[in-house]
Length: 156
Image 1 (tube, rainbow, N blue to C red):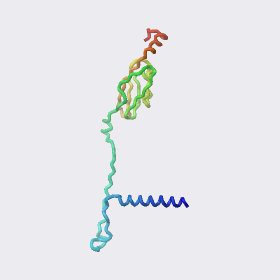
Image 2 (cartoon, rainbow, N blue to C red):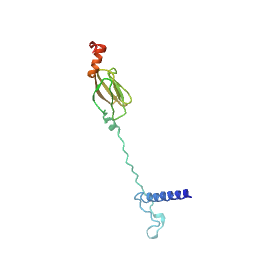
Image 3 (tube, rainbow, N blue to C red):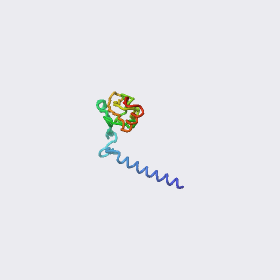
Image 4 (cartoon, one colour):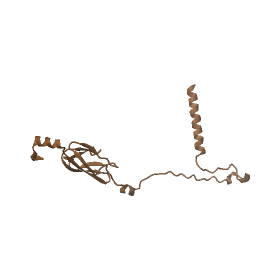
């Protein structure tokens, strides 16, 4: 019995909401049931145009082409074996100019400082727009000492 009461209450709410929508559906002129001063109904004009306009936010091709690709940083300094992430304002593929210095995940822009030096990380969209970040990788003082003691100063 409670279910029937609940269903009836929902039905009443929906009916009231539906009537509100019908009442506020637009500024439609009323259609008279009879013509002026009792004339024939065939003379009544019932052709009404209901304007329908929906705001549509579209981007034209020229706007899409001129939209600049930006990345989170254009220069970055990392310490050997440090990790970082670059982000872009569009879907991009990431690439490093020197994987011995900076390794980059092509999908998400995760960087790993693999060795000392400088590399350029480039983001490229499908339509060919690019942006780049110059990454410099350095050793800390204790990493230098370890390198010199283990491998000798001649290589570094």
